[in-house]
Length: 466
Image (cartoon, rainbow, N blue to C red; front, top):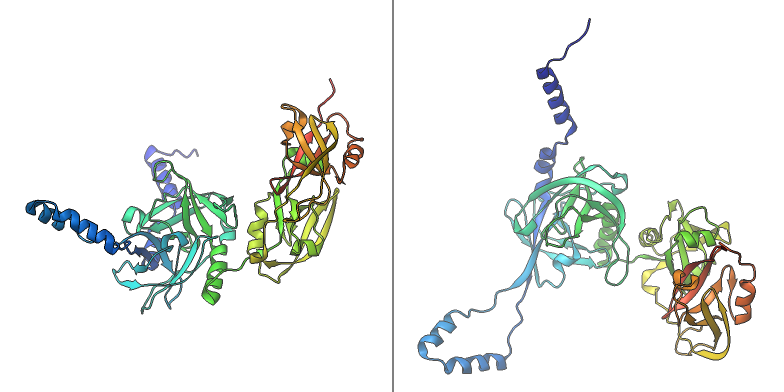
């Protein structure tokens, strides 16, 4: 017997499927929104000096009486400045999480609940590197939220945000996770947060508010947006709950955050570098420099090593390394897997504290005698470094680079100091001549150089013979 579905039956089936497949945001909002708060950060207006006030009075005295009264009436004391943001309570004893930039520089911080209760908040501590702040309020019967496991979050899953965009308190927006592990370096070039990217509508005022999964757990703290108009364009970024938990724990205990430190300068591995290091594909974090007296130096990590794992955490791109190491505590002992000259090595490293890290400056003075030209670059001998900075252990100075040459295309520039060619350390011109003897058409060779005190690796492709 053939079964026939009428149009009405099909519509009912489609309707039931659509309802069943959509998440129930209403229940999450009803249960969780009472613990979401509005943050009001007040900043005192700068006080005017006595001289400025006297000059203003002198100007007023020169005006006719009617105008003088008008200006006196229309120039009240300057109001208090500041801004607003969002946050959420994480414990019954009144601890509140928000963004560092929401409360930075505030003279007074007010926390307002959805039931209109207001509390003066104490700033327990802030962490600029992660853009997180921990506050505390004194109150009874406070609702609170739990931090979930952001590691279980998958791209494509639904997420929900509650906050106060543009001062519109307790607004709710929803969307999906667009990506995980996004790297957004700060103005200082630091990169310790693997952001969750979403298309949830986030606007000014949402900062510091929670990002929920469908279980009603906080999986992130909304922190940044990309925009050209000042409004949401579907690119918003949240700090993962794993980072939030680590920072909150330290702020609550000590009022400050200490991060793990390895002591290396790193860079990404592109296709040419991967070929030059005999990798099957571009991956890992290439060590450009190892800091003196650093945990990395003590463990035997060398310039030119490619870090591919820290314990069980795989390092696919260089930005993964600070994300992983930053969550470690000083004193932790980890296995760091590196590729060195084509072989994998596992080194035991005791993690240090980030505060010990200093950027070394390399100062050099090139000398005139002797030059070698190869791959479109001309190099010459190098004198000892200036005693005011750490010495360069050998190397040759690049005096010129021909535009369009293999060296130029690879990224070599005049003034660079070449310290390694392929797998050979370069101390003098004779080292470079020997290292280049085996180069053949189509080869890729890695070159380590120092530019304005900063070390880096580049890959140079030897042209194919016609």
